[in-house]
Length: 168
Image (cartoon, helix red, strand yellow):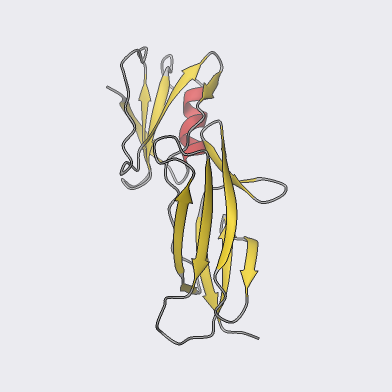
């Protein structure tokens, strides 16, 4: 089993511990965003069979040499906005067993009659896409070495928000 290494806001912070061979040799790590960002480090070889679960929110990564390699990413999750209303955000993946691309959808809740502007925001400050007056918007995400990236140039996704605001 893995050893508890701490709580982190992003998977990348957990990955850094593994890359630095936290305390002892690191063979892999597990990041659990739904459990306060729990990071566990595996200090013994990971030769067991691992299975993907479509409902899992846990990401397990095996270290190969000096790099942690995987072609799949865990599920994306919506973060609460810091100062604006939250919109409805959904994710559609190319494959629920090995997620490598995703379409992120953001819009206002249906049936409320609002005419709000929607925005997909990456890492609290990067407005990736903005829709006007009730428009539902979409953006693409891609997985690279176990990390979700969005935008051009690509931003590593730590937080993802669907913000709603009144039109100007």
